[in-house]
Image (cartoon, rainbow, N blue to C red):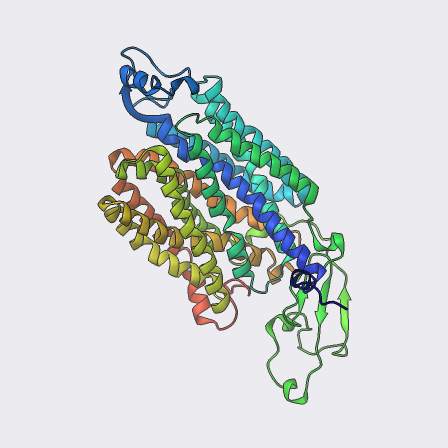
Length: 531
């Protein structure tokens, strides 16, 4: 018999469960990357919506070259002695406030909608809910771009479009986090979700490149193309997303070691044979929580007992989710961490344009380095928190380093392009690390906390509360940047450094508990005692 080809041996070396798990990992990665892809164009197009005023003669000279016959001349370009300062109504001196209002409209709607989205998502099939959100988000992202082709100059049109788009995009995060957590257990959760959360940066990078390709020639396509991509991924979601391993009779946890585990359908008590020398030793913490209060097993240790699942348990209430230890602290921390992250997301290209005097396309391409740094920051935060088993301490360390790094960034970015590139990578890693860890691994930990007693209907609500609170900061950050930036970009960086300090402050209690109490992630995994 001939030996199997190397490729076939590789394929059969993985089990059916592992292939399905890898498929869900990649699918949810691409689904949420497309959401972020559709959010990035507004920051790229800002430099085109308002630009340095050019006289009508200069504008005419730009379009009357030898190749002008092959280009479509937009109807909004002005003639004679009029000036072209961008796209009305963003061509006025208060353009920064108007652009900040667009960001605020989207992010405020996103923050409010997120609180409701988790509660709704717990009660609807994830596949249908997520598909609806992606199709609607694609439609309203494209609608913003249609304002270019239909020559729309009403601020109300763009604000309302942003508000509705913000609301429908709230369907995404609770859905993908819940789905991924259904498929992956707690083993190496920080690393797995740290890698998976790089979809945020990948989406931002792709969104910057796609929007930047058309921003100087036809900025409407900078929105229409990402909108079409989101809608197409919505169809893919409807056709291929598997919500839970039980739907195809797969296991929901990684088979790394024979520890006690549980999922949303059945709780399994896995007990191994013990030797005489092990009988008097300390019990595994996760195994201990599954035994009676006296610590004695009522069953023969070789048995595997399947207990009734929680399918009949009701979805957790909003106030019930808030009572889970650690939810409030991490939610408030994320409020300030996300404020910093989203200020960079929406204003970084314009800052680079102002400081380094680059055009909108080159500034958009350069801003992707911040997201490249964010990929490494998210993965690094996951690896460190898994190894130390201290989520709050890992976030606190990165927040502590982020504040002085932002100060250095604001100082050296004026020295040249090389300094800007280096600080973009470093700042991206330190700013995105805590944000990525809290929205993924921490949310999943809290959504499956022991105090829930196996109720699987809490993860989406907990995720929505944490990310919804963070989205309040995401709405405030770009708005404050728009209000503060006319007085100088240095003041914007001072605001960001203050936000980082506040984020660290809200984690002090959990960090103290982790450092003073031995054991895995004491601030999250075990209920907090009142002092």
